[in-house]
Length: 286
Image (cartoon, rainbow, N blue to C red):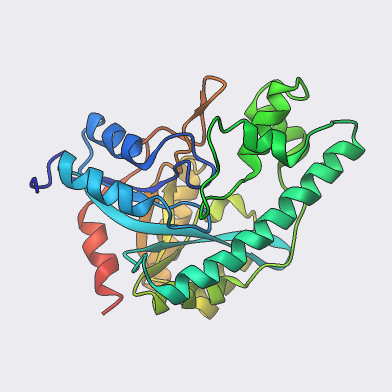
């Protein structure tokens, strides 16, 4: 085992091909090392399938890898994402709960594809899976970026952003919402597995009153202040909310990899927090 190296910065929000990222967990770890980071969290959607590989790669590379997840929830008609850090990714109850969520995600995918077909875009789930270029593993999941990839390949969208802006984003023509667990329940799941829950990218919800309700009802350990889709004004606003509620300010790039030459949402290390933040989050689980 090598000692932790790097610049003392940690990107606490990255995705791998275990959900809707483009890279393997090992590739994300090595990219973090190339960027000079000291740490990285693997936070795939509704799955921890990439964590074990990333931990092994981190030991080899001298990079701290934080076991994480991003759980899909809903509140007041909005999709809300809850990050979890330092959880026991082998916890059997957690794995059973996540399996239920992936079933919900599959239902949403079929609803999206049905809406696209209604708009004259002939895309099947098998075509989306074929775009992976490899078999989908049992604990991996398909998400909207995979569908966007298929749309671009078939000429229905110019690029990933175009697919989301016109069809797949919240409120757009092919957007689909399915019943999900509440943010407070996801936070409970994370705590049950020994982790620290954090509200992800609050600026994307466009409703700070709802953000405050989630803070008050769920009592998370932290709030994601620094995110690729937050500008300076959002960072200042959510840093103030973090102080108001006594929460740990966290941050990360929300890196999903490169699709059609575009990095989505941001490059690894473009948003970060001091590595000491990881220890602060851990303290909230004791």
